[in-house]
Amino acid sequence: MRTSLSALPVFGTLLFIFVLVVSVSLQSMAQNGQIVYKKYCAGCHGAQLQGSAGPALIKKEWKHGGDRNSLLKTIRNGVPSTEMIRFEGVLSAKEIEAVTDFILNAQTSPELVKKTDLPLRVDTKLYKLRIEKLVTEGLTSPWGIEFVDANHALVTGKNGELFSLVNGKLDNQKIAGLPKTYGTDLVGGMMDLALDPDYKTNGWIYIGFSHNPQNSSDKKTPGMTKIVRGKVREHQWVEEQTLFQVPDSLLVTGGTRWGCRFLFDKQGYLYFTIGDMNRAGDSQILSRPSGKIYRINPDGSIPKDNPLYGKANDLQAIYSWGNRNAQGLAQHPTTGVIYASEHGPQGGDELNILKKGANYGWPVITYGIDYNGSIITTETHREEMEQPITYWTPSIAVSAIEFVTGNRFPRWQNNLLVTALKFEEIRRLVVKGDKVTEQEVLLKGYGRVRDVKIGPDGALYVLTNSPDTLLRVTPE
Image 1 (tube, rainbow, N blue to C red):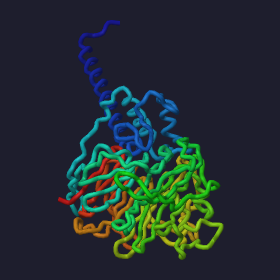
Image 2 (image 1 turned 30 degrees about the vertical axis):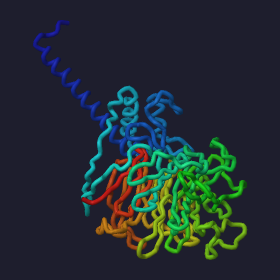
Image 3 (image 1 turned 180 degrees about the horizontal axis):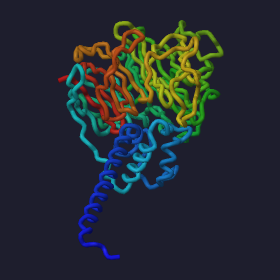
Image 4 (image 1 turned 120 degrees about the vertical axis):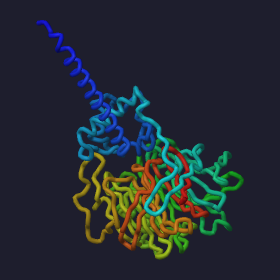
């Protein structure tokens, strides 16, 4: 059959249109996949797929398969006993396919993952914020920050380090003799720090870390969060004292979610948190350490008005229980009420008012489901179990919290700053007693926000992971 010459231009036009439509469609899918990745995946796997809390996604060897079908299966179903949640039901089938193809294409076309410079000026409801990148190199997985004075701060690093900052710059001489940590890939490591209320006269520094008595690096070694205090003298950690350590019979093998956040209240008591160590049921057992918030005196002794004081079969340092993994503690500057932020599973991150002897319900009640998509419990309420004053579903991976004080942000006075790891956010909450009346996202996308502090100068200091940075935020 002979083709008409007059038909060729039409055929060529149709072919051009077809190629153009396919090209635009593929480009649209790629952009959609990148959007989905940024929203749901970057917080754990890094903005450039370089890895953070989760593994890197540009690599040659894949534990669960790196072909398209394997990646689709992993994203749909999640990975049991890990933080990789089931996304089927959270994302549509097209979104799962788009993000899968984005990850696959990034293996051979890394230019798809472009590093973008985030703005150093941000408009919020009440202020225009100026963001200063104070430290961008030298910090390794920073976890907590405390200010010694206006010119000196200390920062813990997850891998077992204590960094010193002088006049906003990192001291290159490392502090030696620190306690050994392990389980950094089990949501553990060197975690929070606190300074004694009388630090200027006694020099005590408090540190929480994942510990095993054998000092083994094998993550199968039984361990538990340990609390110590010590001093820094001429870049040496000295005079270490153990304040909280459970007997070997209470250690946990292969646990995750170790806590640990500190708070010294206005009465001088030290509060600290221990996560559920992936043993949810232990949160309800008062003779086991997992899933609790504790209160002790600065020397490690037990306050006589603790709810379990004198009960020989229980851990008498316990202040509350039924907590999954509290990683934020803050006391209201005027009311004295203590608030705690807590990681839920897939959904159900919580903000609670901390009460003596209260049961926060995990895992009997929760607003979340398990990472594999299964139902943990059908109950969200039960008598004699506390309700959160707010909760976040999907989970934002809530971390540290801090009340705004000082004169730098007067229009934010006594507002609560809430940080998020997975969502890479700082939120401002207006809290009135047991009600959250307003939420505003202030910063987003600058990294997994691990800690936030109002400094002696009234500025907001922000510790992030992936990238590991310290930001200073002030109003223009």
